[in-house]
Image 1 (cartoon, rainbow, N blue to C red):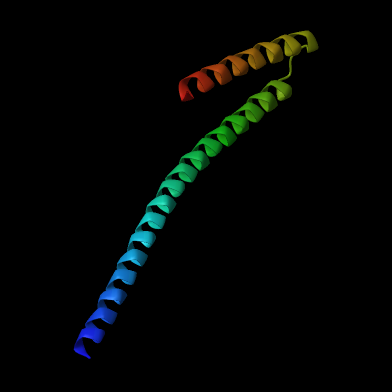
Image 2: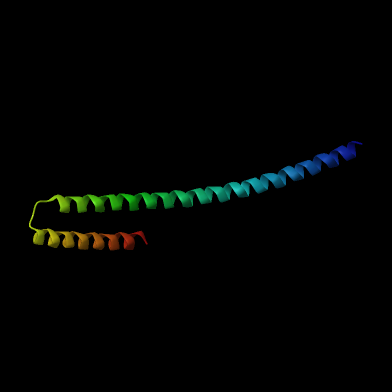
Length: 94
């Protein structure tokens, strides 16, 4: 009788131990995934900020009262700068 109860308890302890092990592994996987997604979110937020800055710069160029020739030239120059900055950001993020 006591021996049977002891075996049942040992079986329950073993099952609980396995479940704890499984939950611990799952927890570690979820933590890893959360870290990965947090980094990805941060990167996406930086990209959004970068695009917002591009839009602001474009708006400044478009709203500046200058000759159409000068405006086109300035717009091209700023776009070239923006592209160069994009390349640098991409290079630095690698």
